[in-house]
Image (cartoon, rainbow, N blue to C red; front, side, top):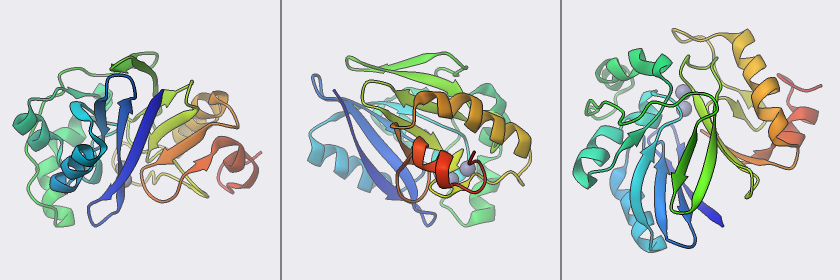
Length: 211
Ligand SMILES: [Zn+2]
Ligand SMILES: [Zn+2]
């Protein structure tokens, strides 16, 4: 079974998630935006081995720590979709703009596309490309565990901002309706910020996407 623990990091309280295979205790860390010692301490306490870094998108609060963590632990960076290359190229500028520690540059070992899968231990998650908040945003879906890690696409009661370069409101709404809703009403999602919710609850109550 897939298990996970969320560690909010950075001044933006970004939900970094450690996801692992219960059988092998191999883990992937989704969106290590910063505060790497806290993430590494959580992995040690859980008794899991960090083996990969998966990125939903390349905003500083999600990707700011990825380069350093990859270099120090020798981990591959998987994702996001190539549409976010310009955000990776701009990480240094994002660091300065938001007062974050300087982000180490990196090149993903593997880019992701819609329909891809990622595997940690014996667990496989599906990748959906969900542009709108950023052009290269992806989400990770674990159908067996009925969980999805959606970054800044959808939040409990809200949706991602689309006023950054490359943002597109209509595209974001389409990503949510066409690529998240089919995962099922009973699927619980971990958003990039704030509490978890289910797609069913958002379909009923989220004023941006209900109905
Ligand atoms: Zn973002
Ligand atoms: Zn964010």
